[in-house]
Length: 344
Ligand code: ZN
Image (cartoon, rainbow, N blue to C red; front, side, top):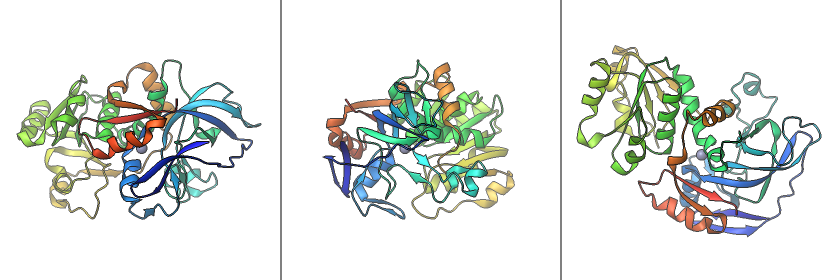
């Protein structure tokens, strides 16, 4: 079958490959329909590695996918041939201590699509565990189905933050993860979410959502916006999605006393922080790594209309034009939120 293969940094091509996929009793075979290009795919394309994960052998890219069920294993009961589905890209060891504790995202043995040495899903079909395959509601499109993966990160952050109805949040960073986190925070009960960045082009899409307040940090208006919305108290929740050292260093600045901060963005190396400023406000810190058990609830919110992601899809390319799509993504246009690939 055709697949988009990363041979080494800077070298991707559509190739014919045989994967020898075997359909187990608890698996489904899926014809891929839509795949979103993630920042991690682009990073592997440009650098051939992310931290300790190094591409040592040719690897298929892609992990944000939806498709149609082609075949079901003998023991599968909740899916049938023809179902429209989306897939969770991380497959944990079902017997691990972490999986049994419900934190399967932290299983050290998790096999995650397009994380070396595991092949991703930018290929015609995949075989996947039915337990990590979810039926799309009729009113959720394939593109929205592929968006569930990045959305799940925002949903996990919103869940960990312990949002109370009417909370006011600040999201730092308006990249794809910043925007989906802001949308998840709104869907989770925040009345207002301030989202800040250094680039107007990134903020433009967020500014169109009701309840989102887009602020360019360079204008110097962020303290005023926080103060105006919170009567001078500071925000209840801070979602750090930039990974930028200056943002992390001053994380407590805009937070209310007793606030919760969730660290989502990954700084490229050790990031210092003003601990005393955080202590003086008794800030509770949470961290997240990917997500667990977020797909069903994310699909419910997409179906209900409480999460709207169509405006986040900036460009759609056909699979045959994958290389051009990756070049576009690697060029880093600030106005691009999500580039989507369609298999046909
Ligand atoms: Zn992703």
